[in-house]
Image 1 (tube, rainbow, N blue to C red):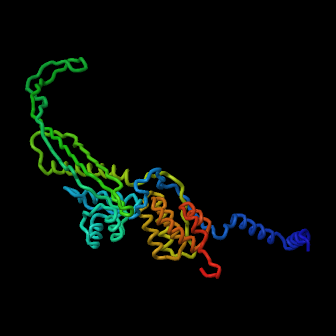
Image 2 (image 1 turned 180 degrees about the vertical axis):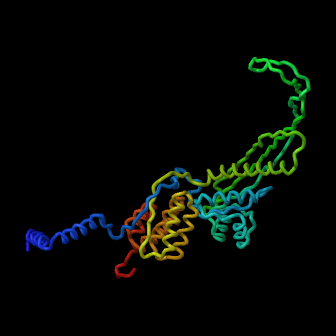
Length: 374
């Protein structure tokens, strides 16, 4: 039967069945139009967001191959506080998996080492093999000083005399008012001066060399405050403590600029899941996307890492984890997760990500011999 004959039969049946049949046909057609184009099989639903990602640097500090970064206690006064603050700020960036000073010291003790070690290439590679840490940041505090001094000044304070008379005001008018005289009153002004100097060293344990020595020294002072009489010593010590905290923060922010890659805003795509996935994993995936959109990459990586642990065969979890790792510069880990996602589901989005991360050779699959065995 030709196509024209089939269309004629369709209209004749509709005319015989009445207007109800036509309304039903229009309703079905509207539903098909609203459904839109059918998504291709294997193309997962993606949600695109604009977020801060690592800008590939032209010159790398140590080839950006350090993915596990350890911070050891700094030698010198307040070295522990300086190292903990630096470890906390490094972890906040998400660019590395950061091992804090306490945990790093435990790893060194388990390896039979003290905090100090020989800086020869073989010794540093030995530390890498025993501790699993790619690079270490440490150093010593070379200067740590807070000095406060007071200066006695005078100010003029008006004192009423009890006499009244006519005086000319500043506006040029004549007014009858009480006369005052100005007498000198002693005033004490205090200034706190703080100086912190630290020498940062970065050991690349994989390559077995010291890759950076970052001397930093800062001196600043608390804005002077003046008072009449004495000020409790607790207030002065509190002001000095705030001064040192500010100095530590400035010092570590300068070092972060040398250790952490620059960022730029770019569009990244995460896979959205729904049907066939447990509600807990759906909520965790949405939480990870929220963290990433707000720049909290460490929390995003931890969230998808937990999703991979709970659902190791889920390709979407490994894909989203790979995108998050790549966004903070952890390319080797990201390539590994993207490869695992591609093995479990060869989808176009996974292929694009793997190629972007330099894993094009992983798409060829295992080589086969002439006997048919892998």
